[in-house]
Image 1 (cartoon, helix red, strand yellow):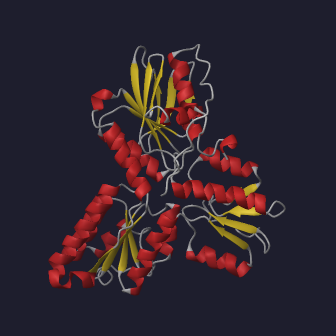
Image 2: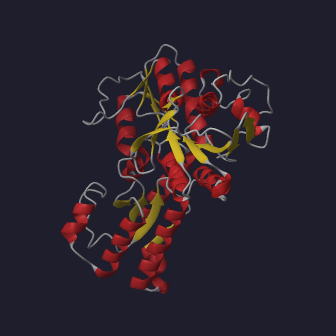
Length: 393
């Protein structure tokens, strides 16, 4: 996979930085690489399984029910291997072309219960690359259903993972942040305007949802890429709400909490907090990852909250070397174009990448940064490095 730019680096700049305490000096540019960055175990596993599927079934038609991961270059490489990615173009996914005997790959985010049943009935060969951490969340939602609890899912209602998770729940409501969770808790304690409630969560509740009868017993689940701290706050808020309404003796009858925060997401966030602990020690941050990547957006969010100039790019193609210009995204979705973003003279840059980002993407971004600083830069010579310590989660 490395030769295609979708695996771990073993000879490139990122590998050499790992051998150099995650640091690099190139002329006047000092680069600090976060201790935890890039591919997580679940993502690398999903991409590897897709590659293996192509090799195992060289003469079969292969389909993925969505992008395998949120990285444009990886998904393009799979298309080049003649693996068809079925995406929702606004009218729902069209699976009509998939026939018995074809091979269907479920992405790292998982697939819905309905999709699994559809392909099982079709008699297709199914390859499930769902991240085990996502499956852990599904187990918690299943537990909620068995206890007749409504699942409160901390996530984005349109995100593929949350769509899949919600399909395992009997009753659910999706809250995107602490503010929405507080609104739900206020309704649990005090009641409120039902029409307003349903309008606010019209796309984020199960069919037939009734806030007056379906919030007496709740359990918390989360999209694995959400901010760890916010998920924990929502859990404490729900617990305090149910305790206040029903009393401590009956808390366990009305609230279910299972640990479902993804270690990989947590570690990348913690590593970014560490590298930005002293904002004055870094002139700017670069966050590399797909623009539709939830976990990458939260890395950008952390940097922005620290007050550090931070540039989120999905690939090196967003950087114009000649004009010293970058086309980047902010945590809350705004796309910006910034000129003269790499200043002349000594500069210290922090860099990290989302859990769906291969090392090559980081290397290509830094290659352009070095060229802006020094037009005579010719690239980093390959060097055999210590084997990558593959993440275990």
